[in-house]
Length: 191
Length: 191
DNA sequence: TAGCACATGTAAGCTGTTACATGATTTA
DNA sequence: TAAATCATGTAACAGCTTACATGTGCTA
Image (cartoon, rainbow over all chains, first blue to last red; front, side, top):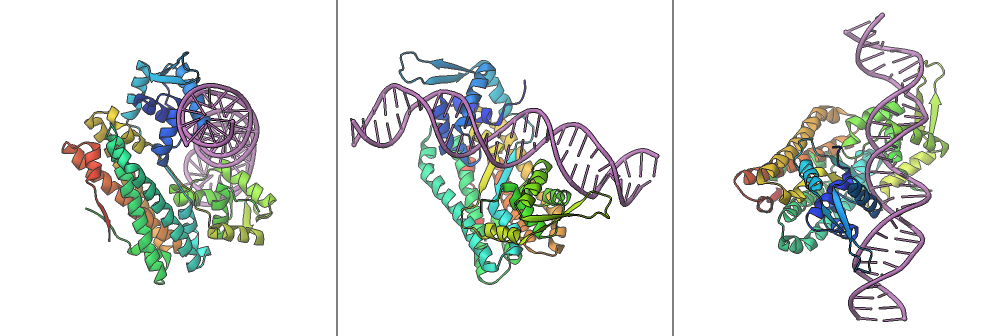
């Protein structure tokens, strides 16, 4: 049994928890996993087809429904594939693309003022993510299954930490320190 | 002037700071920016060609050098493009792909023991990144330009925070809490 | 009845990795 | 002299986004 494609991983999980149509999956992904696992229609619909061809999901089109909506569910093979992936011991993918960090990496080619402006933009970005998370939180807390709310807590902690870290760097840059000095003085603690 | 392609952004920066060949750029990227901005030969060499065609860089092949090495430098247009990108006020790209978080998101389909095993693997991953950063640090600290060391400090803080956060979650999971409970009790502080 | 949400799908194009091909130079 | 490193490049393929095409059902 070959590995699940990246998009297949979200799809199987989403179907497992009752998000049964491609449209549904997209809608839920855009409100939840997109912060660490995005998916677009261009990936979702072809992948649903492949998963059905491969026997991991089964699609049913209700003929009474005038909308040509196709409702998917996991087959036994699909359940097994999902659980196999969830419990696999290969190191999980972790990939980051952070343009702000790249700019800071090259910030010896900028003035301190220009660097400060970029740091501010980076902090704003993470604050905005925090705002989105806070807007989602009541729904996550009230949801029937608890794990997503746990992940959201992690996201709040993470982006809160990053925003705080940038705030500290900003203050030190404003006081005239270099980026390296400012970054070196930031000491994180978890309690 | 159209936007710099993702790989063009690292390339211009790297050339600016004296990494003059495709091979060089790849080597340095793999020791530094790859944690937040990766690049492969399949991107680098064609992009060097395009940048030269576009007049942002100039390549020189030393005929006395038996190795067919091509040494690049920034043209005035290239300097301007680099600086324009560095100081642009569009919100910088921030993309994360974290398979561990996706598994936790779906962990209601796992037993507590299986979830714990995944959290341990995630922590191990970040600890391993920390080890790599610590190995790099002396070189970053001794480098001629200071900004990369500042970024490394940020990386140490970030992955240290994440590893600590997972350690806390692990302990609470071991004590029998659910993921949502364990995550909710973790309170981050920066000082 | 207009507009929005529901619903599925595809085509074009960009970005990226992996693996291979080729050959020179340096070092053990 | 063998192996590692330096050095450039390409072909095949995987993955992803954006934009478009098409049509239904609900609601103000």
